[in-house]
Image (cartoon, rainbow, N blue to C red; front, side, top):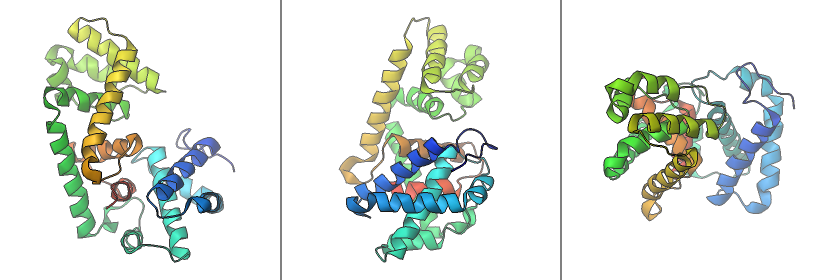
Length: 260
């Protein structure tokens, strides 16, 4: 399998295989396919990807992260495989039948839009339960998930004096999580005149994400993990920023990961 890097370094063999593993594992975990068929399903979707590799990668619009796009592609392929084996549940049939454009809201039915909006509202309520930590947690997590923060958020947390500088630092091009922790640590220390270490930021983000995930999954209402929480943050942030409210890549993942 060759790698197409016109859109960046995301379309590598290792990344494609990694995402395929993650996606198929989620279907095993939620009982849609048996563990004994894991390898067969993975090989099936990787083979299909190889057959359509140029078309799939050239269709990437950049409206979401490469990992998100690949996840949506492999979810669709896995659903197609399940359907072909006649073990496809009705709810997935409805999603798949309406998944007619990987970059268009037109594929969403009114029911799907209602579900996504309900999930957004629940997410907002969860954030309010975090009290005074909510603003910091939301901003830190956005930076961690490589989502852009805006001037209003920067002013609320860092003050007018540091807002523009903080935006420049925190909206940087981070190559890894370590860069994120270093940047957040730099801003926090300057604004609050402290000497925290990047590891403190790492622990804060991890503990914060666990708090949010536990509350989102309370009572087995959903099955979020760190990866899908990043998707939810992205959907939420697109809504708040009044850009395109969502794209089908994100929504189809959100619907599946919440177990709707």
